[in-house]
Structure formats: structure tokens, C-alpha cells
Amino acid sequence: MKRQPQRTCMGCNVKKDKKDFIRIVKNKDNEISIDRTGKKDGRGAYICDDINCLEKLIKSKRLEKVFDMKISEEIYENLRGVILDK
Image (cartoon, rainbow, N blue to C red; front, side, top):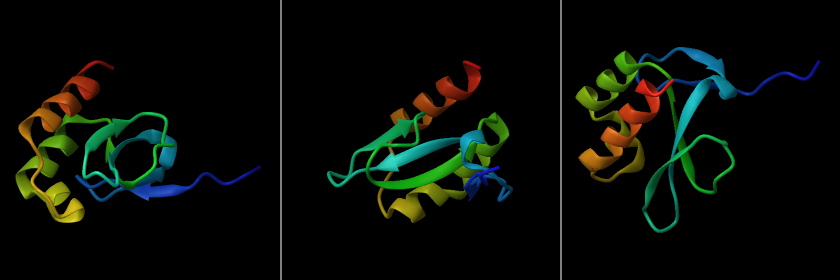
């Protein structure tokens, strides 16, 4: 059996299989997008499919630190929509 790649949630710091996370990507043009496939090019950050992890991520501004740029409220709203749409 092939091992699944492990990633760490930016909100709660728990390690899980990559497929259990939502991936947030920053591409070469500094555009932030949500990547459900896990295959888009660019720098990726991972978050659990949990609203509590998203709130921790927003409060700590950790995503802004990782991507070294200001994250718009629109991105956070899109993430909320994806998480609450389960």
C-alpha cells in the first residue's frame, strides 16, 4: 500500500493525509486561489475542512505570513463558503 503524503493544518497544526485538507495556492502572479484538486502550480498552504481552523488562521494572520502578502477578505469569505458547503 502506498503511503499518503502528510501535511500540517495552518490553523490547528495537526498532521493528516494531504487529501483531508483544503489547499490554498499562491501562483507566480501573486494570485491566491482555493485548490480542491491539489494539483495547481504554486506555493501551497493547507487547512482542515473545519470552520474553527479557519477562524484561528484568520486571527493569527498565519496565511499572510506564509505567503508574505496581504490576504483579502474575499479569499477568507470564499474559504468560509467552501468549508460551510460540506
